[in-house]
Image 1: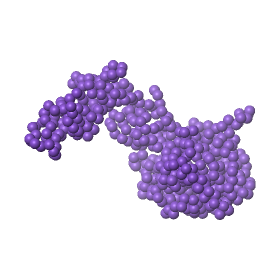
Image 2: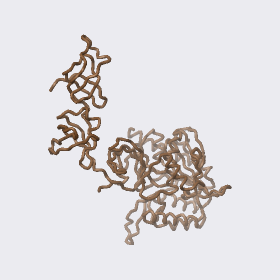
Image 3: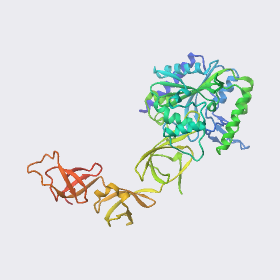
Image 4: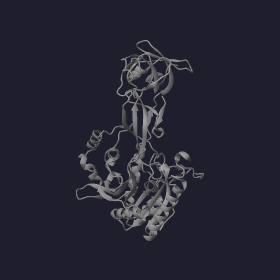
Length: 315
Length: 190
């Protein structure tokens, strides 16, 4: 891609995003990239930075602007969006760069289904595409393989994955969610129509992240979370936001426990965020969308490095 | 033993897998949903030549395979082993029939072959892409036929049999593409 085309594509995308949200009366915000607290999610590694303070208190580059944006929501910002860099240690590949561009937004009063509609409208508005879309339950994707990802035993899930020829080398035993993830990437995803926007929703509660959990009539606990697949990529992830401060603390602590079990360092929790939650987060839904990947789709690029000014290998 | 972390994975890297030396063909970093990261890798088993797909948990390490490729000159065979020499160091290597495999029918002394060594022993011997060999036996062609259409079998000095045009005769030197096993042209003797 010619440099001017590459530069212009991003400028145009950002302009259109801002125009879309201006029309929706969603406010653009700018929150800090550095914090003394970190995201304890065991599947995400933060960059640790010397804060320059004598007390030896490190800072962390944000893995997403979620905690600061939710503190703004508590303060009464109303619906907000942010375009920023997010940083994830060790994530590098065809579709990953350790520093990447993220669009994150929160809609006050929306549930996750309304937010899916919002994502579709935004993508239509910014890309000029009018693709088909489909909304499907996570469990539905596993039906053709005789699996129920919510209720089947760990052993059955692992055995079915092995039957499908997934061959994994790992020093530690893989857990239930690892097998489900691998089943998704190795078996189910290759069957997705790349041209169709596919929203997968209602994930197992164990994959809730910061989503609200709901117990269905059948007694199954599901996360009110969705994931958008398009052109062979995971483009966005959103949910009805968890608002219970005690539950949030519990999930953080659980994540730190898992970190220890995996031999990772436990991380300082964001107490200011937890305090804010106690004051009351308005009912809202939020979503993070990978802007570099969206640019890849718009420009027809195969690798994330093609849309970046300087990829990981060039800095 | 040297090891590689999954974040060092890339095409061409040689690693050990289930006791066999392997070469990475393709590496893709995948991070499904909110889950942990994996490296999805296409690998060639250098012993069997088979290509397989394997997934590694990201961040883990695997043993490196001590595999190098050298350009070696073929010297001779004693019937059991095939002997090669590095023209820079004059070090000699002996390859067994597994390593030589199908390349055997193209091996002519003095030719330079690509030899893959594992732990300093020949694992794969690849004949040069083009070899020039003498025809030791072929039926006399029909007089006047220069078209080459159809052709006839010819046995070469190494024992290989290739199809050659009818006008090519016993005692002539021909050039052969070893990758396809096809006749390319007549060759002048050096």
